[in-house]
Length: 137
Image (tube, rainbow, N blue to C red):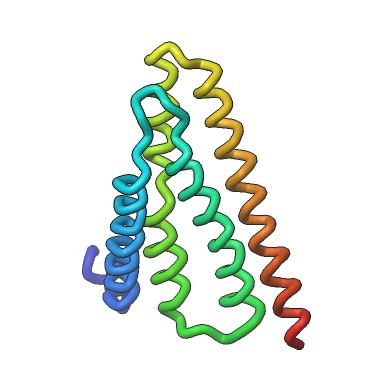
């Protein structure tokens, strides 16, 4: 059964794996460069998630509306690079740590900023890419 499910998926799995490794390395490097102090507001993780969502919005427009992209571009960049770059598991962990650390107000602000910021950034990425694409047509 596994062989039939994976048949023809080798290239997609490979580009997702490579892209995921690249995105995760970029996220790790930013976390090392700008660590969050214990109990502090996780600005680096927030920034990573917001920027990743903005780039996802731009990517969706470019691969779905603007140009005919190679079939592996979307899995490489969207699932791989941006999936590895954004870090919603760290977001959940950071919020939990703030809560158990007695910082419920900071946790709530972080939860709200991430939700609103990420969705807003994705919408902005879509709108900006659509506007830029329209200007080029």
